[in-house]
Figure 1: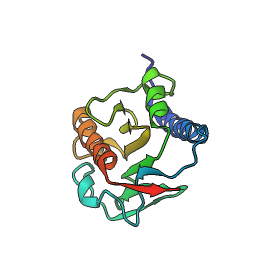
Figure 2: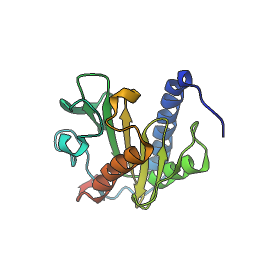
Figure 3: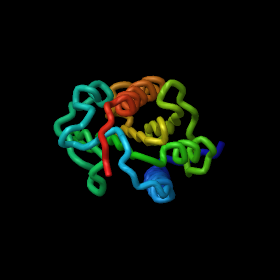
Figure 4: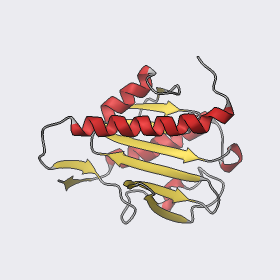
Length: 177
C-alpha cells in the first residue's frame, strides 16, 4: 500500500472527486434507454435527510443546508466553520463507480463496507462512503480537520456515513425524465 502525505490529500481528494464525477457521467450517458426512471431524490429544498440526521458527526452544529456549488444534486450540510457533510445521489453509475474504487482505479485506497446498499466502499482519508443500490450512486463525505469530528474512529465514521447512504438509498423514489 502506498502512503500519501497529508499535503497531497487535497490534490488526491479533488482528483478522486473529478474521477468519480467523470465515471458517473460516462455511465449515465452510456445507456440508450431514455424512459422515465424511479430514482432516489436529493435536493436541498426537500432533502430526504435533515440536519438532525447528521447531528453528532461533526463537533459544530449544522447551521445551514444548501446545494453544492456546482451541482444541485449535491446537498451540503454546513457549519459556521469549514467543516461540512456533502451528500450526493445519482440515478446511475453507482455500480461502475463503486467497482472502480474497490478495484483500486482511484488515486486513494478504498475498502469494502458491508451492509450498505448492494455494495459500498469506505475511503478513510476522505472520510467518504461510496455506495450503490440498483446502480443508484450515493456518495457521503465528511469534510474537516481531525478536531472537527465528534469521533475520529474509522468505525464511527463508517457507521454514521454508511447509515446516511442507507437512508438515502431506502428513500421513496420519484419519477424523473
